[in-house]
Image (cartoon, rainbow, N blue to C red; front, side, top):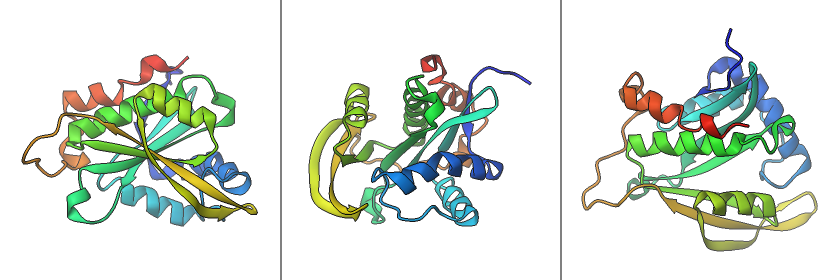
Length: 199
């Protein structure tokens, strides 16, 4: 079995390992506004629902899941269908090893291939490392929701950042489903695009 890093679509068998990465963020931070760690079945359902319209990626390093990233719907109205919100979480053992950069690079390449145009990131403030990461990646700030969420005994602001991932067209086609793209050479090229960033 290869020990080289890989980036791939998440599978149902990954749920427990992904939850192990996510749980500390739920329990000890306001980075996510969830109060309780999701049950494995609920998290599985969430992941599989996402995979019906957008990628949910995991990065494996020596057969360990070092981090994951996915795109969620920005809103449900039809006019928003070309816009998604990104999230990335990295296991504490793999901080500063290029995992987030690698995952975002591959994720955005896949979203471009699908035909999405806008990607957004919501960041609970203050969070200088996340803000720096997103702005270095190419996101620009678009606004702040002041004191929009209450968690861990305090009200929190959420800043929003945006990046255009391809030029706009006058009459965009609906984004393509993942099943229509998997197996194409462009799919594999996009999926592996982030690997060079892993240190």
